[in-house]
Image (cartoon, rainbow, N blue to C red; front, side):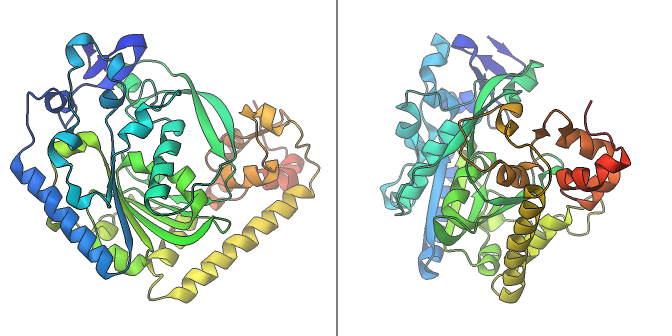
Length: 400
């Protein structure tokens, strides 16, 4: 059954039917990819590989297999005879060392590798893809420690149907990476920029990523391996960003359905300045500091070093503050529905309070405290430190 551009498959698995890329028209072969698109792909790859080799940069392009290709057995019978766009139109032995299509890694798994009501992979799928990336780059795959969190999740396809959230399992790696993201300050995900920094990463390498939301899903795992990562949501290969960021590795990526139409890199826009001067764009100071320090890495290395040192100092300060406060951390993981974790709860809180509604002892909710108190939110203070240092005495509300 098809409703609101969503194909409802077996076992209530949802698929994007057409979308802007007319996904099933191409998968079923009722439409064919035009030669111009195939030529653009070929020319882009030749240029990207040549540029990367000339600048001693490792380069890899990742194509994320479409959900219908991997979950073919969940499709209705009249939709099951489909073909991979990559294998049918784009696979080229000339680029075999620079392109990965993790079809086998995602399909031959005992666990599901996609979210049931979403177009995207689940965390287990992203981990499999990350492992393939690491191996293809010539690095060792490391054993990742993580906790599991079950939470209600409303997928993009369920949203299109007006459906309800369902229970999904998420992996939370024990990861000291700091994340800086402008996502909350833009409309949709166009012009999204995300930076990660992990001083304890396995490799002290700088990675630059151009791609869509699928490759962004791997950042929680890639940031365990690489010290600095800059992700730009763009389909193009921006040489100006490469020159300023000075990466050791460049990754480009796209979901398979976007192979229906490939644009030339010659059509690229000035990505970094797209939002420059936009009065509605005002990301937080932490993102701006990270952005400026990393984009200026080549010409202003002292600014990067100063920023890097400040992150270490701030983390130690917040950790010591929380450690010396009268906070009972024993029930932290059960209170927040986190399972099988080995990570220090104080470290977990410092790294994740901006992204999760973390609760303490049934008296403090991070989300409620930030919602109720505009001054804390605008000054971007650690809400738990403020609550125990000032909020309790001032009678500030932190729990419903």
